[in-house]
Length: 265
Length: 285
Picture 1 (cartoon, each protein chain N blue to C red):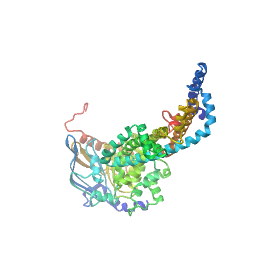
Picture 2 (cartoon, rainbow over the protein chains, first blue to last red):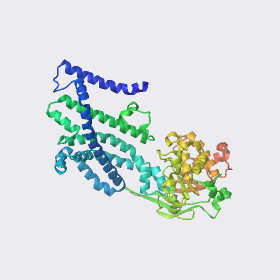
Picture 3 (cartoon, rainbow over the protein chains, first blue to last red):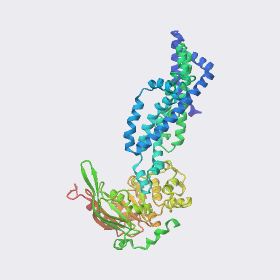
Picture 4 (tube, one colour):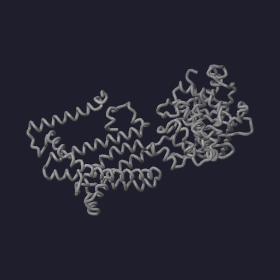
């Protein structure tokens, strides 16, 4: 219990302070709700809309999740090729950079024209947003293996596939988890950007429609829903990371920022 | 001691003190040289090294950093080919000796896989060579290897839970898992603190007396070379070459009292003089 307070106390205090200032500001200056709703109003609206928003969120999470899965898969496969064959790196890395720097927002109308107002344009945008950090981190991780460990495996006759399986893959996992923590948020943003341009369901659609109606509290309620989901996913990835990478220095309880591990992994 | 080491006991009767004169050498290097291509041209790391090691013999390669002793060891391990000269390991090419699992290697770093338990680390060479004929060592035999290196209780521990010295002992057990005839050790205690290092020398002697292997041991520590070796090949740098091969005529088993004996000190003085760069003067000497 005491450790719970020690861990959760400071961040909750930080959030509480901002919420209080915000509440006081909107009340004292009597800011109209269609410009900036008070936190209390947002909370009430969130309570009213929670079920509907939850349904919309589930759809957005599905899009983001599928996109993240595809992006991670592309990133891992691409990094595996690039870490082993210089030719693959020369051929694929510029392509990856081109795809990455293309403004995804500009892609959405094209994708919708091709595929329609369904799930897939959002999934593709989420995948494009997520594959790059995974690719770059994994290439680094697959290469950053201990020279002695590599020579040891060679000295017992391991071939490249076995060195990948027994050494490189494990050595790259910490890098993969770092990339995942960035990619999770990118996948959500990707899905919402996709929904922005036209969707039947999804949090992105809710934000756009409430925006058009100047329904600020509805919009904020949707954003709160997204923030809660984003935090929950970060905590989940951190939790998985600490179990998978129990052997890695980054998961040891000592060290800087250790108290916030539950949030940042 | 166990079934694991049966093959090695045959060589135990060899008179290690005079092993150099026995005709059947386990490791034979003849005029071995190694060049590395660098941006500023070719760099000779090893120049014309000839060395023979008899079965069961413990030979140290002693020299300063950059004298090519690690390169020489990697040539013996088949990890890199020599530029010229011939290398015979257990009667064949280094690559063949490696394929037949006649050679075990220990590196400067333990190079354990941190995500594997100690047991799984020792068993890793077997997993890599699952298709090999020799790959059916049972769990109990791995535990036996661990007890040989004094870690019987730590099979389920992870490397990060062990000290540096214990990790290096795991690496030694892992090198012995195929029961090789030859053990190549590349400054295995170089990364340890002085106190652990002192202990590990005698620990290695104990392991060696239980599982008699032909050992080539790379070191830059004079004391380490004297305590462990039957013979010491003193190397000079740039390019790496064997300056002199010394026989260590100190009785075995060797203990810590050896380090204060007059023979030990005389030998250490001699080696120190040999390792001194030609023409260098020592202030105050």
